[in-house]
Length: 501
Length: 118
Image (cartoon, rainbow over the protein chains, first blue to last red):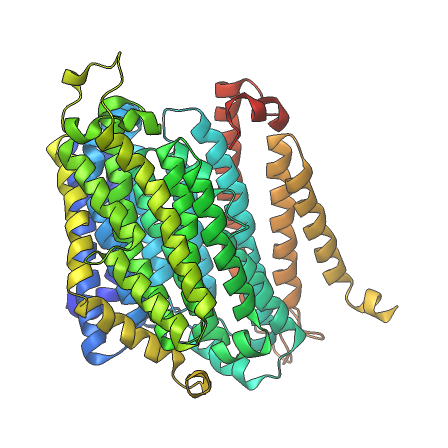
């Protein structure tokens, strides 16, 4: 019986678990329950992905009200794939949370942490799975409100101003999306995504729809931290608890990239967005600037979490660059990078959290001599760092490979060279930390004997992510199959494919 | 002239939207920022509510002899958005309270230089 309700289950599991966790309060039971929920949601996501790959898209009418009147959940290869990444990484971060938040969050607030975490997960899964544009806004706000709370849970008081800035920017972004959806409804009289797509295609490009596109693109760009709308992200990731940074960096912005893809390809149609409105040049320019400006900013910071936060903005640049190339290969590169970046950034933030657990600082100099003191943590950091740079045999290489080949397919040599130069900047900012860890001794005044390896409960999820990085760097069959299906499906019914190739 | 008179509801929406947005960007006091955000969101509520009106239509309750009704769906949608707006305001204000406790001020320029610079 559960089989046919899988799409609803992906949202309902964390949504139902959240209040239960809240009532149970703080204890190990809460952690077990949350982790169990996450694991179950991941299994559901995996089943959904297998089903969609075998049988095509699943349409599920909530409460039996059929679309376009009722709210429809639509699962295809695209969102099942992103859902798997989001739920899988969230579960690993949940396992990691137990030891990490014991150090970074007041004991009295642990119950709130898991509640907000599960609500954020429910919201993100909802955004991914829903087939209704207004419903997407509601889930976006559920996940956003939960993430503002998560950021503000840290013991450092600067997390409060960071969370406030995040709240202001996030709400402006979400409200822009709401305005855009309203304008679309005004013109088309529907909110179902597939219905919207049909009716928008039938209309002449009226000013209302153009304005709707503008509002939605700007709103989503704030949410995904596209340069120059990224200013909220570095403070939020820097001052949030490490587990929260790890969760947000690998899920929240990735889901926003998915929303951008969904709006452009499913609702507006790439012909309209890229050829009539010329958005591809805008995206390409901003993405290139993001890659260089933010990689440079990452290279000059002293706080390792800030370095990783700026690196996240740069990596979002690569995803948007892939989309802006307007070919199936380019889109595949963007989608693969969503998945792979979730794997590498979560591992990196987990490693930083482990160092904070022992040293109590996340400045670059706190990493000095850690190669000897915490060999497993630093090895994990180094491998995940290599993945960010894009070294062969890691997941990062696969995304860079697709991105460069997409650029070359279009004869955009300059873009291909810029992508490779961007990777060189990644060597600088990751290299500084690795150098501090392996080629320096523990600074004087710090008791080296106290600096031992992180607890096992932190190391296991960290290494699961690192091994996933290596696995998806070597065996790419799952990622390329899912992503290939998704991008072919997204380009379907547009003549763009023939034009572009 | 008719553009202004016929679409006066949209002009109100645009005015509120810009006023709220300006307050969010320019205000120095965090509470004022939250209020600005509220005005900004309220303008969107007005946009949705006024778009549901069908000229000549009456309230969407079945009455004998009436054939034209206004569209109730945008009104229902905006109820959800109002709830979201209330929740956002609550989270924002509670963050302001905690900022006041932690920094002793809610004026942005007074703590910006202290240790918040990024």
